[in-house]
Length: 174
Image (cartoon, rainbow, N blue to C red; front, top):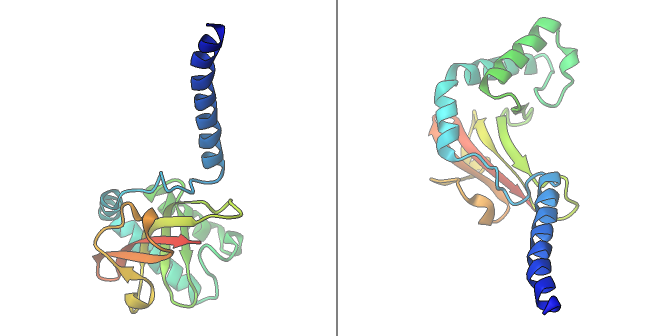
């Protein structure tokens, strides 16, 4: 009888403890299962609400890139105080923890809203957000109509067009 009581109490406790450890590992690993990816609709609404800010940051990044400075790659301290403040102000008005990067080669400007899995030695990483692609988007990724639930797709870059040159992107790495 005591064994059955211990089993009835011990097994659920073991399951709960295992689940808690699993969730802590997932949290510390930076969401490798893609549980926190923003929905396409949320990103489109954010883009519509902050269209002017997205465009302003893009123009600023292009202007500074002409001077040899790349957003997200170069040190922010290499810019003057007022320019640093302008970037930080525009970016924070879109989202407080937004990572913005300009690729100097293709001039693709990425606004990364969420990502994960990058702290794991093995396993996939992913990122999702909005990007501006000034040239042939077919060289940048695979066009699709829905990027929600993309964690099951093979590694690659997937795009959903918002409007001319603006896309939602989902990138998955091995």
